[in-house]
Length: 90
Image (cartoon, rainbow, N blue to C red; front, side):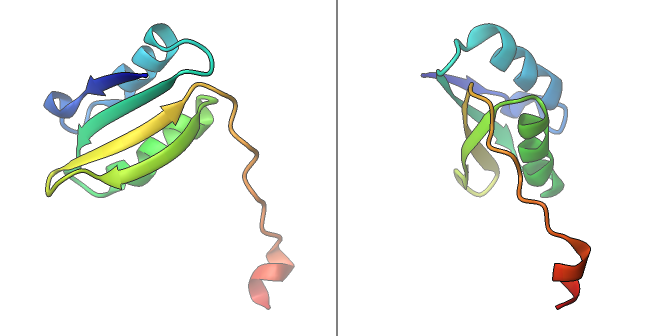
């Protein structure tokens, strides 16, 4: 398990996060990534970026008033559930 502090990058941490996951984390290993919340859209975007890159987001929690922590495992994520249009209307 490795821990990475990306708080100093503010809202521009996505590229560095993926670079670290690609190069610094072994398959099946877990990474803890901290970033500054800033705009709350960073939280959902970080989850989407991790999923699209092929990693598993194990946990996403508020660390304190300004920081967020992600726990990411370097394994392929489970497929997202697809909600059919007809099920949404019911």
